[in-house]
Amino acid sequence: MIFEKVPVFSKSCIIVLGGDMSHHTTVRKTHLNDIHKKYGGKLVDFHGWELPVQFEGIIKEHMTVREAVGLFDVSHMGQIFVDGKDARKFLDYVNTNNVAKLKKGEGVYSHLPNGKGGIVDDVINFCLDEERFLVIVNATTSDKDYKWFVENSKGFEVKISNKSDDYSMIAVQGPKSVEIMKKFVPELLNYPRFGIVEKEVMGQHCYVSRTGYTGEDGFEITAPHSIIADVWEEFMKLGKDLGVKPCGLGSRDSLRLESGYLLYGSDIDDEHSSYEANYGWVVKLSKPNFIGKELFEKQKKEGIKRKLTGISMEQGIPRAGYKVFKDGKELGVLTSATYSPSLKKSIGMGYMPLGLNIGEEVEVEIRDKKMKAKITEIPFFKGGVFYFKLG
Amino acid sequence: MNKENLKYTKTHEWIGIEGDVAYIGVSDFAQSQMGDIVFVDLPKVGAKAEKEKQICVVESVKSAFDIYSPVNGEVIEVNSALSDNPALINQEPYGNGWICKMKISDKSQLDSLMDFKTYEEFVKTQAH
Image (cartoon, rainbow over all chains, first blue to last red; front, top):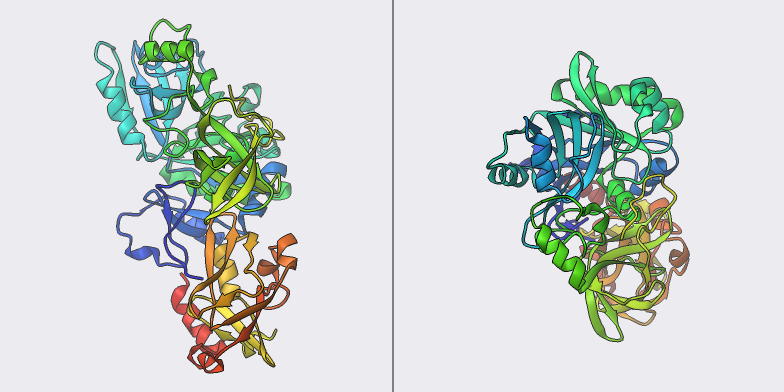
């Protein structure tokens, strides 16, 4: 067995096993790096960030989040603040989902359409106040999103600030996260999914939202770097009797895929639309105007030719990049795939032609062998409270 | 198998000799680096194995790993218990987690492999 660069999560992500991280000069460390080392995290290079892929093991961490509560360092995620008289109007224009209707303390998951039938990023928009909004964006796209916002802000009275370098972020996920919420941020209990509160924590201004990427209940805290390690330890303390565990990117990926959450750069990108991603519910054609609205109307009317489709298999482990076949004909390529610890079988998804039925037999090519698979409904796992309903 | 009596490759496989038969598996370091093993694409009985060439693939949750044959030979038995419980490699890499049995064609090839002590030193240079 040779430990070399092996792709994980997506085609574009390279991790190094058993290698020395120190000669990667461009790798950025989060402010929880020492904490990860303290808890035995196996650090890897994830899109230029040194982050733990696992601590005790992916399956154990995955099941901890499904049954108890786990902590994730998601400091690589970005924060863009949009302030001003037209903040609401502007965000409604650059998003597919309805941002205009958000009240203070509410949030909404949405796509940023690129006006050419693709997606700039998938984000969560939070209304902090009438004229103050926070947009949580993906790590690799924060600069791109910021530029996109600025380019499209002509005629809007808004101030756009990319504060991604100023904040760290921790996700607390799992059914028992509510117990930590009760003690740490009880005011959030009154909020539904995507609610957000601003809160002084350890003397610092923080943002705490009822969000996550696992399908379970939970919350995420955006905090200045100076307190993030102490916040992590506070969660470890509050969760001690609940069985809390530090969790890595490995389980983050298997949890999100089971729950049907998209990974930008793999499942969605500048080439695929929200309808094709089977996320039509984030596109609100009833809105007066937004970028690319006419393209969405056209797609809705004329229909799409390909759709993000789920597969599952009892034998063999599919990976992103593997091809799917039906009667010897290639249907498409998997954009995400993994072993599902909750279902104890393999799952994956990729863009395939319309007309495939749930349960229909197909094949996935694994190392020149065609292995049996079945077209499967997404989300694959519905045990969590907050899986996304596709369609 | 007693790990101290095994021979090791630089690619982290081990080989243990019992008479004319050799057991093959992966080291404890290898299983810890791979993480939770969820599938073993076992070799076929009768397959010809060549030193340093791939004989099978072990898949963990996060990735697929090629396993290389330590010596030339022929696969005479595979550990079918791994089909139902691939995590045996994580739990007992030197015991019930063995991968296959081989008939070795050239015993002198064993001389080029590392003994336990040398391998332990080698692992130290590989670890973080």
